[in-house]
Image (cartoon, rainbow, N blue to C red; front, side, top):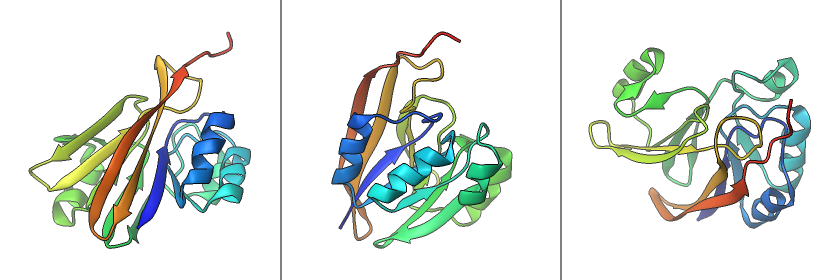
Amino acid sequence: MRKILLLSDTHSYIDDVIYGYAHLADEIWHAGDIGSPGVYNTLNAIRPVRAVYGNIDGKEVRMLCPLNQRFSCEKMDVWITHIGGYPPRYTPELLAKLKDNPPGIFICGHSHILKIIFDKNLGILHINPGAAGRYGFHKVRTMVRFEVNGDEIKNMEIIELGKRTEAVR
């Protein structure tokens, strides 16, 4: 069994609450828009990180993280990307790949909207953890945690980190 902390769209921001949850996980998965290598490195010093870069991430983050990650966790096939769409409206460049070889879990970020949807047509659990950072239009900062036990997801929990209080720019 692996305890997973899933977050996205930190946009260079992490705080003590995120650190606390990171210490409780076995692995941290980040669905892009990390914002700075410091966020990645800080999280990776706490627990192993599997992350992808997002559209706001610069060269330094892109050197640390790929565009897509596909891997096995326990017996679960996992695919993480930043911009992937939602069931049934996946991005055109990914739809054919998802139909041809669907993962058990398909994780995206980008929208800042937390959604957990089971795609009955493809047999995929789609997860977007929302946004854990302070930048964007979302009202509440969110993350998701769950356990992967063999080929099953257990004990999924939505974590609300409080209201987004962004500095005026």
